[in-house]
Length: 181
Image (cartoon, rainbow, N blue to C red; front, side, top):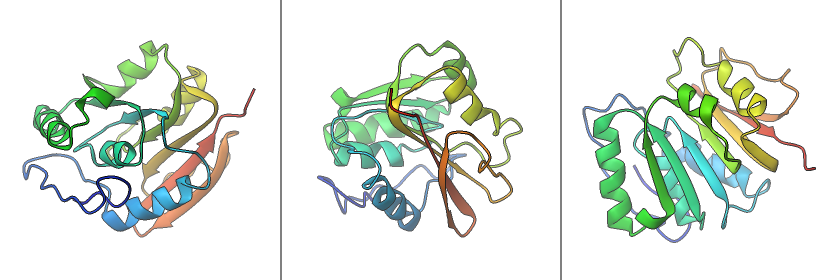
């Protein structure tokens, strides 16, 4: 796993071998951030990383200047890895790490975020509920961007907040935008 841009560009980390996570590939992550550069100014954003896994997207956000990143993850091994890596990078002050279930978090969340990234297990039964909850609970700030990583079988093009979809082999990123007020 490598950080592909920003302050920590080129830094490599070895995630735990026993993790249930499937980290976003470096090629897909680089493409994701190339698209994001045209949609949102990552510097100083308040970000939410759902199903954070090994924290790969959050390190990338921090490397590019995100000031406040909340990570939701339930696997204890991944949480330990995230804390260790954040300490190594000196970014623990920018991370709020929550151990728990993403759906429970979304149901109770009262904050708004400028950028939200969700990388749920592709086989998750209720994967299609995630975009609905993000917008129903008003978690994305006005003008904010939400990206969900998923398999090709999921299609969100009819969602009212859909703006684009990008396919990288078995990985698909769907981009949503909250209208500005």
